[in-house]
Length: 165
Length: 247
Image (cartoon, rainbow over all chains, first blue to last red):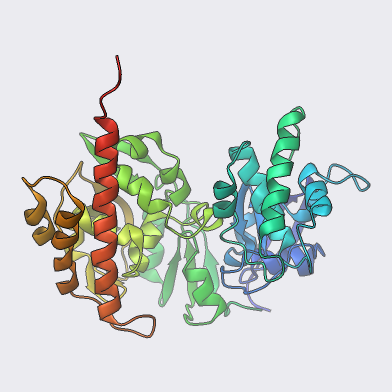
C-alpha cells in the first residue's frame, strides 16, 4: 500500500472519516470503501458519465477525481437522491413511468447530472435537455424516453414547493 | 487501482507550490484533472509526485483589469461560462466554452489546466491564440508574462519550466489576429453568402495537423466551413440588432 491520508467528508448527508490511499479515485473510494455501488464505472477516463456524482452541488465525474480531494467536501450519489427509502424523487418517478432506462447502467450518472441541470434550469426545452445529457452515454434507450421523462420531471418539480436535493 | 503510485501534495499558496516544484523530481501539477486524471488512469504518465492546485489560494478569480479580462489559472470553465462579464464583453469566449467538454467536465476543468495541456484541438487554446492573450507564470525568480504566441513550443508543450506554474491569463478586449486573408476579403464589402463563402476559402491554405483522427485536408475543409458559418451567424445577429422596429 502506498501513501495514505485520513479524510473527512459528507456523502448523502452522512459524515465519514476514512483512511485512503492517495492514488485511489473518488469513484473507487465511493464504491469499494463506502460500499455505495450505485455509482457506476463505465470507461474510467471521463467519457461515459456513468460515475457522475454531485460534488458540492455540482456534477462531476468521480473517476476523474482523487478521493483525497474530497476532504472537507459534500458529495451526493444516486443513493442520496430519493427523499426516503420508500419514496422516489420526482425525477426517478418520471424515469420509472416513462421507461427512461433499460439496463440501468448509465442511469445513476444521468440522474445526478439532471438533478443539477433541473436546479439550474427548471423549465428547459427538449434541446437543452439533450445537451445536458450529452456527456452521458446510454446504449439502450436512444435517449427518447430519457428526454421525455426529464421534461415531465421538470413539470412535476415546478409544480411542487422547493425541496432538496 | 487505476492511477500509478505517487506522493500527494496539496499546497495552500503559490510560493509553497513553487518550492515543491523546485525540490521535487518528476512532479505533475493537478488542476481540474479532466485531462491528467484520464492520463493517470491509463498510466500514460507516471509521475513520482502529484501537486494538487485545488487548495492553493489566489488562483480563482475573474476580474476586469483596465478593460482586459484577467482570469486566475484555477478558475473553473463553468464559472467563466456563467460569468455575466464574460458573456457581455467576451461573447465568443462564452460560445467557445459551451463546446468545451460537458457540464460535468466544465464544473471541474480549469482555464489554466486547459492552456497548459495545450491540446491543439482545445477551444480555450484557440481562443487565447486568437485574442493574443498573455499567460502569467510564477517561478522561483518571481512572476513573468508570456505572450500566447510564444506559449506553445511544441506539440502539447507549453513554454514553462519544470519549476514554474501558470497562475493566470489575461485577455485583451479584442485583438483579431488570425485568418487575415479572410478579414481582408470581407472588410468594406456588403455582407452576402457568396462573399463569406469565397472569403473563407483561404482557410483551406491554413497549416493543419495530419493524424490518426483526421487528415489535414479535412481540418482545412472544416476551417473553411466553420468560419463561413461563424460569419453567417455574426451577420444574422447584426441584422437582428439593427432590425427596424415598427413604431
